[in-house]
Length: 442
Image 1 (spheres, one colour):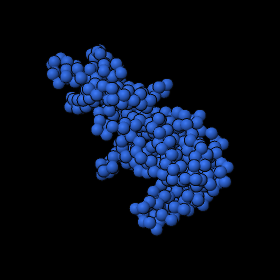
Image 2 (cartoon, rainbow, N blue to C red; image 1 turned 90 degrees about the vertical axis):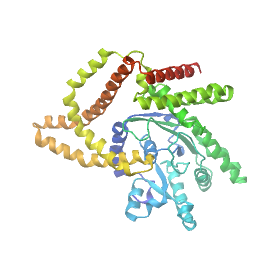
Image 3 (cartoon, rainbow, N blue to C red; image 1 turned 180 degrees about the horizontal axis):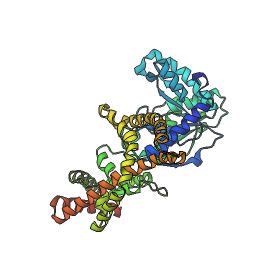
Image 4 (tube, rainbow, N blue to C red; image 1 turned 30 degrees about the vertical axis):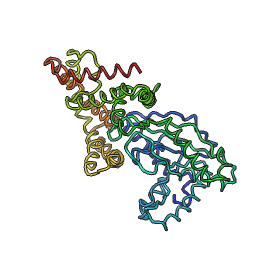
């Protein structure tokens, strides 16, 4: 599979995608929530436009929640080596040249844009990250015009006969860097390019701006967008304080709870600036004090801290300790080792990409090895197979076991603060209760 036929279906790629998707959707993330698939008509010629906050993981989020084999546009500088370029073409990527690559190289974009017409005509789906580069803030930045230009050029070169539509895509991560987080992908309402066709024929620049602005507005509807730069940290933390417990909710996903919260804050900022400032200040205080006291928001929400439940939890941990030890084989191999290189990577938004890539590579290396070892150590065959199949599940149990330890220690820490009438903890709890009360009134 090369550049010239990148839009064609590949059986080898389909097999690779199915395996890699399992690792992405079921192990690297603990839950992947997908909404809006009913907006995707297989008879349309679609261009997908996701927000870009988490490096390569944004592209994978779209890839592993779509059927078929969509093609992605990527930075041209990573295509310099022929061996790397061949791999990138195999995984359905096309190069896009930028000004920093040299003005002369921009002419090579014509070949890429011509190829995108073939991709759009084939209904494979084209994925363009319209912000151009990633940035780890929950905010949609100014979109580039490239995606609109591609859409109009494809519409022209196909004789204005294809139902070309741009699909806004909203991506939200419960945490950018950590393992076993929740990924939410929302496919928005399609934007028909035909609605801007006549304007484009007469005034191309105006049509490009109008389509870009509409795409921006539609993307903001399906993603977390914190417009305020001054109060970004306080508002972003407030999302966790108020809505963290709803991260796994399928009926009313946290993403939309966050959007409602932010919209209400925006209205309060205009109508009641004093209340808005108090909420932001309390949010910052709660974040700082809870970090100092090593108390998470789940513990602050609890009205009672039962000693019986804490002791019962310890008994449960003792009884399941052998399973915890067994599961560490999986955790150390696939979750801990990939953490090591991230210490040298300054751009934190690349951390999850590196972790995923290394953990995936280790999965391909160690999974066959563990299967062979289980055959050698255990018999008969069905026992060795059972042992091998329990390895990933025991690993996930061990991951939850560490959370269990953290929560029990936190519970005892709170009891200690309460017993000693700790003033710092009392202030934290007071601010937390005041903050949640004010937000509830909104």
